[in-house]
Length: 291
DNA sequence: CTTGTGGCCTGAGGGC
DNA sequence: TGCCCTCAGGCCACAA
Image (cartoon, rainbow, N blue to C red):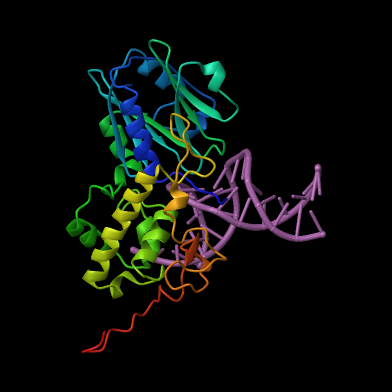
């Protein structure tokens, strides 16, 4: 088992579960955290004071960020970034579910609690109004969500930049929601070397990559998430990503497509798994009359 | 503008 | 078996 972290699909599944569990309309009674240093925009004291009595009016996702919209004359948002090991659990009984990796609790009227669990303490929580969120260096520059963005916009935003495709895909300012797993999987489907320069990519290649990324995301959501270890659904179920995984973490195995051994390298600062045979940097164009 | 490195963290897993 | 060490990764700060 390899390290698998929450990416867009986990956040999307969390969102769906929270909607199913009908937390919309619930009134917040209190907020607690043991990691005030992981809070953005508001301090723990200020959140606690400000959040009481507000109603959860929306549950949304953009990229890897989950937003709980809160009622009030001055609307607020409580937003979560799970980073590597975060997850949300809806619990009735805190004593039963709270453990040493519980970093924050949102207490709801009626006895339910939203627990933010994050063993590695990398997760981030924002609290603030729309204007404050816009001024945050991460949220304020977050690109369009990968499941929402059109091909036209995806192409336009990528083409404005230069560099290697993998590092651009991971840049949340261009489009949001792509993490290391999705990037490696999609590049494999698209038969692109992760170090391919964006400037050298054809429109057709980018179009295929666009649809492969969306296909990978949809497949992982359908499989129930990438969870192998850190992440779990709010209701405790685990993900079935193993079944759809094609390249990520298969370092010493053979490519599902060409049966040659896959490679592992550090690219864009991340562990990267790819098939050197299928994913060549310079694709030789098909000779006229070929194929 | 770009790339690279170290730091934040803890738990898993390899080596012995 | 159990200890030690390295690695995993999203993002940021900082340097080149």
